[in-house]
Image (cartoon, rainbow, N blue to C red):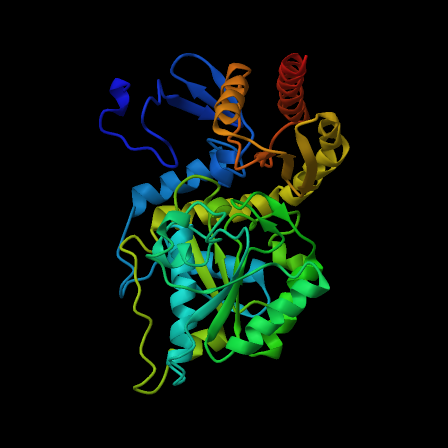
Length: 425
């Protein structure tokens, strides 16, 4: 094993025979600079976080100012202006009667908080039996225990923990009349046990970049209303403009009770997430002796540095009208993704906002490693997921950089196609 990995354990990585790791030493704009001198054009925004690119001077100035004033203070009993201002900004952007913000430090934890809030919402009203959640095929909501229990139990990354996790109600998205009936039957049969429904609006990202139309979310919302259960939307990956609107659910008629946000919230500067709720949820924790306060509080909750980065990110997004840039990226995807449909190993392509997807027929581990290495050789950073090659670039990406990503992908796919033909011959 490489000497730099002597004490490291990397995520989602088989560490045996891993070889030499890529070592980043600097970043700027859309580029990652490696120790060996290679420069990688980042096509996935560092796991969908760096929506404004790297080393944004506006964000750096804001965080540096906060660092000199107060890098951290506990949020238990003490508040600060960065958190106050950020809560105002978030609720102003998200709208839909979502007025209370509970800060946490990662997306997975924001989901944990959402699930706990939903369960305790019912407990505080004397309905202790309502502790199950409806969740969906290809869904992914994080790596912590509660979050894993509402991920896809068979196709997801956490299937090996199946016997360890709480059992919830697993369904398919209501993309057909039959599936809508199945979903409604499941909810109707278990309505006295269900605390809520959790779903990623419009795009199931880690589950394979599955994109579905707003009308599907509308159906889920109507069922939530009909059976008086809570709706939790996981906007961790889709929030802050990624799908073309500030939040993906804004493209639908859905009015969630709880929304989880994170990733692009701080422009990729530092980890911060939040669970945003309506006053109806919040008020269930107030008042009489039986309404116990919400017992959750991350040590670095509402860290001032993270909040300052988030405040600056939202300011920058609005001031520079970056949703227009997202629409321009979407137009580029619309015109150019279809070029990949000619290859025999490509199943289909799709896009929404600044998300472009090339779905392959299959992608075994050997081809996965080969693909990654070919992209790295050509100076582009991608990380294929399941059987998809996807692009979620920073919003600031220039047209010539998008062209480089697509030309590189075409070159690699041409090489791949030739290898397939040679094997057939």
